[in-house]
Image (cartoon, rainbow, N blue to C red):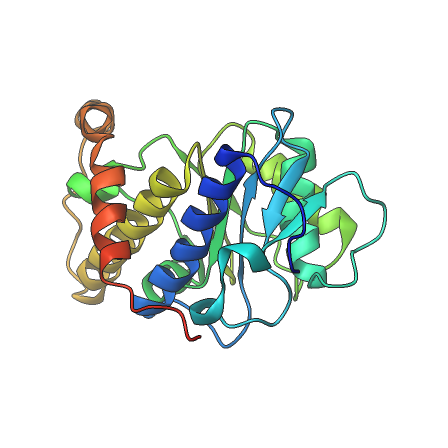
Amino acid sequence: MTLTRALPDAEAQLRADLADAFRICHMLGWSESVGNHFSAAVSADGQSFLLNAKWQHFDTIAPEELLLLDSRTAETPADVDASAWCVHGTLHRRLPDARVVLHAHSPYATALACLADPTMVPIDNNTARFYGRTAYDMSFGGIADATEEGERLAEALGDKSVLVMGNHGVSIVGDTVAEAFEDLYFFEKAAQTLILARSTGARLAVLSDAVAQNTADGWRAYQGMAAKHFAYLRSRLPPLPG
């Protein structure tokens, strides 16, 4: 989509942030062909949101190419992948507080999602970061492109900020692009730790509920890390072609 209208500063910044999130995701090795999708709400009610067009590689997405969509649109827009509309369109329509939604098939998060029990068990700082914040949907039915599947995912996510999608991947919800991306980053790190620990076959040293909650609460003081980390990662991006 080529923009022909003057953009408010907030939308222009949101476009720049989201476009860079795609490219950072690829830089970290988490992109998948020309699939997967990130979105961010533009309007106060969450219904108007930005989304990548279907089948464009993450490493090529520029701010002006992001689609501006209305979640209340009845049919899947022509330039939008059906699975993206199912997930992101429904989440923005049903959950207006979900300002940013990042869906990815990062390797360890996806491996975790493929376990019969994909619970993010608190065994260290990173895994405990998500204690009490993670929801699970174990009703995988193939490519997520049916209206009822989007509704089920929204119901499963509820008031949590992470949705482990069984046999599929992970979706992260955040207030800003940087904060959502930081959770995506740390969830992948946490999943890696858990997968590696489980691979030993030894018994896990699981934190008590009290210690896990205290650790999760302790992460709140580090919320400012997200913006700093995101700024560093975007500084490592090469210029877009052309």
